[in-house]
Image (tube, rainbow, N blue to C red; front, top):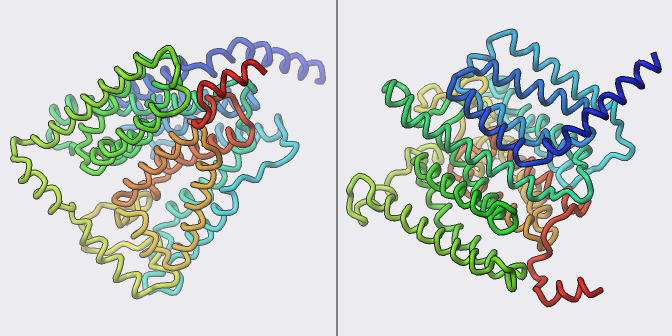
Amino acid sequence: MIEVGTFLTNRIRGLKNYTDKFFYGEYYLGYLALFAAFFYCACTPLLNIYTFVLLGCFLLITYRDLTPIIPLPIFIVLGIRDFSVFSNPACYVVLALAAIAIIAHFFIYPVKKFFIGKLFFPLIVVSIALFLGGLFSEHANTYFNGIVTIVCVGPVILFAYFLFSQYICPPEDFRLANYLFSIFTFVGVCCFIEICAHVLIYTKENPEISYFLLGWGSTNSAATLLLLALPSCAYLIFYGKNRFRDIIFLILIYVAIYLTESDGARGIAIIFTPIIMFFTITSGRLKSNKYQVFIKVCSIFLAVLIVTVIVLVLTEMHTEILEYFLIKLSNDNRRTELYLEAWELFKKYPIFGVGQGYSPQDSFLQYSLTITYNFHSSIVHVLATMGIVGVAAYVYYFVARYRILMHELLPANLFAYFAFTMFEIYAAIDTAEFSPIPLLLGVTLLIITIEQINVRKYAQPLPLSLHSHDRNLIKLK
């Protein structure tokens, strides 16, 4: 038995030597995006789940490092256009294999010393607040309607944070920041393909299909992912190796944001683009870089692109500019109605709120056991469903996340800061913080990876305050 085990171990290690270059490269991420988009367009959710889960099982058994697994949960969801697949027992067979592979990973690659990161205790506190939400309210009988949301937003995210915190350990010279931002860039490209397919094919051929429902989520969900993808792609343009490709990708991301018809996402993208460009162009790395002229041209190109998008938005449906703004500013898509309802619930149940299972009978929103009633604002939702206890927990949670992102003045931290801030601004008018997969898990994986970069010092560009003169001194030393 020992000889057989040694033989299998050697064979696995030999196979790993061949796969390292692929799984730590951008071709792997590109293939994930293309396969997810293909499965989505072909409407083959079961094949999508089997493909990605079995790939994940292979990686869990073969690799100690979980870096190549970071994108898989996101792309699995992006490949699903029909959630009825989860009524198929065959789906749970492969998910059971994934659970076994995760358990096996702990035994094959035991942790010598557990890493307790800055989000560990905040996530415990948030989980407790989620479970306490709704206690002693008149709607306590609906408590278990929100149990899926409670478990997924709390304990599941906590487990994901703990798991990846222990096992993100790529080679020391590996540019983990580039890999991280490449993941979200390809997520953005995948969203572009799916939105185009949905808008240009499915809704045209089937008028009964809503423009705003993509299957795995709404166009607002896609817009949230695209807001993560935008600064990620900008980072790659300035600090990656394939600038021309990434400029094309950035154009696709902007087009996709426009196609979502999300006014909030459009506005956030327009406001943050010049801010991101300013901080990047004025950073020390570009002072004497041989690509300086090229980058400035790219910046001008991007500025022209933004102006074009603004013009498209302002001339939408051939309305006058003033009329357009008046229409948009006066139409909150009934959010005010939700916010007022949330405030009344908070005043009635100020300590623990009304709970995640709250479900008014006469609401215009659609909800179920897996998609709970949401007040379309992270702040307002916490206030209504968890009361003062929830507000305190989420303040602690937010401070911890920003502490990680602001740990050092490095390019990766800065661009991740922009991505997270854009995500949270949009979450203030949508459901991002309470949409576990892919939104909340995606932004949590972003923060986990940045924390590992901070702690383990994986290769990435020099601090933004370090100018070319200082770098020359370093080289002389």
